[in-house]
Length: 371
Image 1 (cartoon, rainbow, N blue to C red):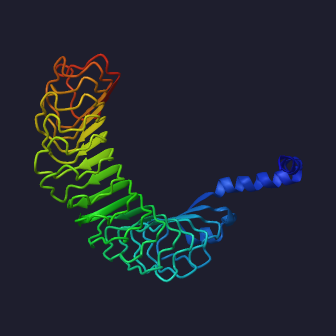
Image 2: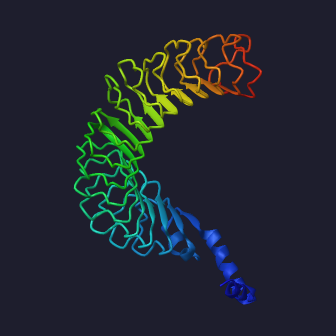
Image 3: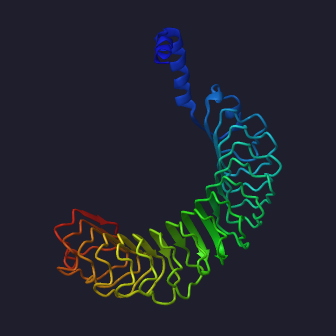
């Protein structure tokens, strides 16, 4: 096989042709158009692989305008024209409709080999069984979407699924077993055995039911628009490594957060005491927190600690192994000698830095001031 290749490559005429076409593919791989005539009259249109469309519906595309070579399309500006069957090339793999599109996509209007589909914030058209191609692996619905997707409407090969405002009750098999990453809106009361058993990532607004979340979860992000009166042991699956949570009205108790967690983000003020945070925690983020923290409350394993803008408390609780610290815009406390450990190498100050009252250890090699 190698001998055949070298025989072909040593032929100067053939090599020149190959290099010519390779150059055209490189030069025309990604094309952005503002006028349809540019696409229709483009001299090397059959070399286009990725197309960015910035036209409005006043300058409408027609069947055949998009070259068969195109594999990825992103519509920008005000694209909202009707889509006919055959409008898209059959080989299209990725399709992003932009913000304003809200037209019918049923009955074979989507290409049969499509893998990624992004529907913008205006899209709110009903899908029935078979309207979404079986080839899809990534679907992102809009916040405006208000139709039920149960009963097998979602293709069985989907791995990533975003339903940011979905308010229908989720039944078993509504979400395919293949889904590994799921973004779910609406304050859902998720029932046991309704989410995919191999789910790895879940971002949701959830009303906890015991044993409802899959044991396979590694990343769990719970939005705080749903109030969580109390978090109990077992609510968080035992293998979760990254947890983002807020809206907890009751103090955390020891053992509620599994020891597998290495990154923890509190999006709102959540009370905790010594022994309630995971023992192997590496990174801790407080988005909205301004409560005093007692010494020894934070685990010694902690390496990265970040506070949001509202935090303004003394820093006499920092663990000895911390490497990176971020303080918010309104932080205005003295930093005394010994408050920051000698392990610290990076300090970010998003507010005013006063060198007379903020004593920074010599170990800090990166000082970022964003004031």
